[in-house]
Image 1 (cartoon, rainbow, N blue to C red):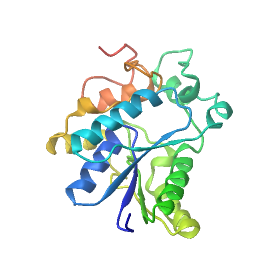
Image 2 (image 1 turned 45 degrees about the vertical axis):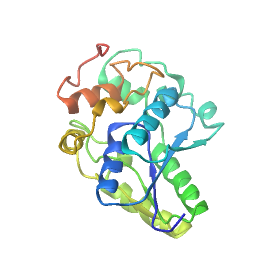
Image 3 (image 1 turned 60 degrees about the vertical axis):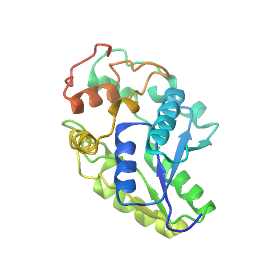
Image 4 (image 1 turned 60 degrees about the horizontal axis):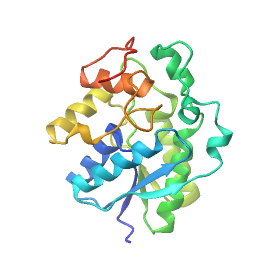
Amino acid sequence: MTSRATCLLHSGGIDSTAALTRFLARRSRVVLLFVNYGQVSAPAELVHSRKVAEAFGIQPPVTLEVPGIGEMMRCSGLISGLPAREQTYEHNVANEHFPGRNLMLLALAAMYAASISARRVAIGIVGKVGARGYPDTTPGFASRADELLGQSAGIELLAPFIGWDKAQVVRYLRRSGVDLDLTYSCNLSASAPCGSCASCVERDLALGTGHAGSTGRRK
């Protein structure tokens, strides 16, 4: 493995698949990393990450198992799989909150990258989702994370879609000819998308098939 490789966190979702598309279009060497930290959607995410890798003709993702995180964070719907009591977008966003998740993922990716002599890690975070944003998907977060990874591991952070919104990312994938059915974007189901979690609603908004008040199951 050479230092020119980029280790990309890949969940099988829209954003990380867009990042993969961007890097491959620029002829970058990419190593996919899938992290199972106990999220209920991990089985489906891994299946779709592998499907994306196969469709792009690259090696399947390296899977990193992180036991113990799930037990500690069962307060988050990402781990418990339990929907918010009130099935609204705002309540599900709060229910699915996982403090420090992107920071954890980046630290793990940097450790793995260092182990294979790669010098870059990448994450497909977008700066805006619908009408709202998340504190760990902002340009400021990415800048500070880049500085920390550089100081602690000599790793550079790449976030090619920081400042974009998910609708822009979807348009980019469509222009690039990527089959969006290869991707998976549900926080609360390990099989078929639930259609009501925050991630499902955000996907439907970006695809133009839903709205922020939507709570129905996706067909």
